[in-house]
Amino acid sequence: MLGTGRFPSLSAIRAFEAAARLGSFAKAADELDTTAASVSYHVRRLETQLGMPLFVRSANRVSLTVPGEIVAREAIGAFAALRASFVRAADADRAHLSLTTLPTLGTSWLMPRLGRFRQRHPELQLELDLSVEAEDLAGGRFDAAIRNGHGDWPGLQATALFPSVFVPLCAPALADAARGLTDPAQALDLPLIGRRDWWALWFAAVGCERNLPAGSFAMQLPAEYLDISAAVAGQGIAIGSPILFRHEIDAGRLVPAHERAAGDGRAFWFVSPSARQHQPKIARFREWVAEEAASARGAAQSYLRGLAS
Image (cartoon, rainbow, N blue to C red; front, side):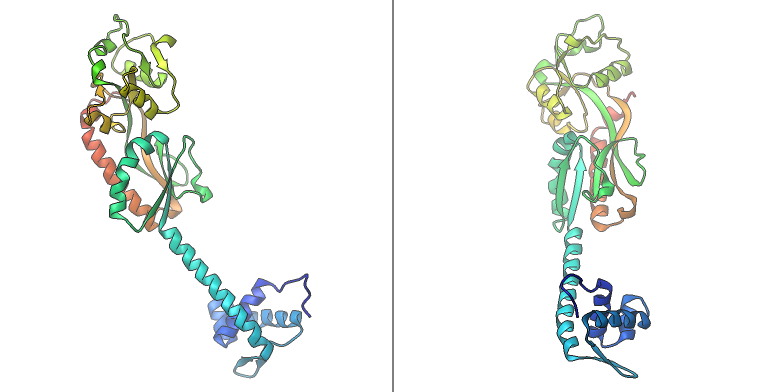
């Protein structure tokens, strides 16, 4: 008899359930992609463990015993519920896209555009994570990401969106004071905001040999979108992307302190695991974000044509 300390193997229960539901060891074998002998073996093991017959066997057919009917009723219901849960889980996964990206790109460029994606694909629910660190897409937490780099991540399919470029940006009221930015003989009348390495690359790209002592910088902030917020508030000249912050430029909250853009050789990429790149939800988002990126590149052509890197 079956004791409380040992439960029958799932393989034996699965074989019994299929045979009971289909009324045939052979049909159960076809469904389970095994042999009728294997199904019979697992059922025999279950009967031995239970200490009672579950099937009456004859030459051409099998039928359930009374105990077998009791077990079959519960087993068939349990497996039906389990199969239904798999279907619901698959449906939920198809309708849910989890995306991770950098805070600046997510807040300044992606979020204002996501309404258009929702209009095109109302069947998809988007979960957006903002993280400075590149999340592992192999762990199952995220379906895809927008990353900054050179597009050479092993195991990931990468679609280029637009280059990583930067240009000095300031509030319109500071435009006149910023005109001497590229004259090394003229002292900086305004503090600089943003990454020192980007400023160094930009000055080198425009051929300006300017010393950048620590006192040249107004503050150190953890994200580019915060640098831009400080520039909008008139706290100095920020170094930022004319693509990511196109809305601020078009709205007149920022103006370029110089028309020349520089780059660091990197770009923004939409990436997803290569094995999952053709999943409909990933393919739909990739198609949409590539269209948005193409529009953004077109709007920034005046900067990209003169790009110095």
